[in-house]
Length: 342
Ligand code: 13P
Image (tube, rainbow, N blue to C red; front, top):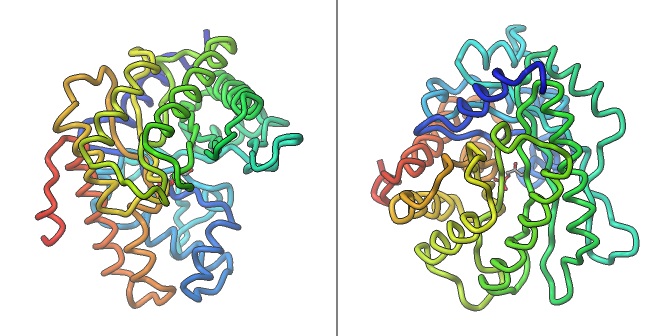
């Protein structure tokens, strides 16, 4: 049993506390720079730092955000006034989390498929991040859908890595967020997404079990069961909620304390509406706490408004607060589209 048994349970429960979700702000340098480039924001460490300070110092964010996932560069940074970001979060009552994977690379022999890297030296990295104040972590596997993929090879390789990561996290005191992202890209139907998500979850939980991961001390971060972005028939909000809950009920043990969805490129308001419908219409069927762990669907309006101009920070923070608040409402089934106008 891990030295951290009690702490892991407490952290996992706090991450999915009622009315709160987890903010993903762990874009790697490359991903963050690509998002900045689209808005012609200089891709410097200083701009990345300022943007992350904007997010973390948003007044009252902790009302709806239990914790935030940081990138390696970010967890080492401080505010302009010199307060470490980890300290800012602790003082505000938000749990620091850390992205542990080192990104997805082409999977040998499997055209169009990726495997996530980062296991080598992971025990030592976990020890360092724990010492810095991190209490949970994230590892993202990417599963693409096309007519003949995902292959079992891709599912097995990614699930194995997720499970090895999760076991190391629990040994070292970090609650693992296990993120198998089934991509929204493509023209596939929602039925095909269901089938792929189901098989992915089966393989992931097989590997978690084999690697002795404690299900009650982890958080699952899945994608929703949803129509492919280019599918000519887009499923309704109710259908997404119903099929997502059905798929999770059939494949995720009830001992998992929490499920926190990624947004995966869904439009902001739709990501909120889907989470809301899961609660409002199917909440009674969920044995786990169910919430959000969005990056784009929370950050995008704030990033667009800030645009690299620091005079825009106060309004950008209000926009961030607004999306966090609406998703907080959705995590209790209390969101309505009219709230968007408020
Ligand atoms: P999105 O909500 O933008 O999909 O990001 C969540 C995340 O953490 C991806 O790894």
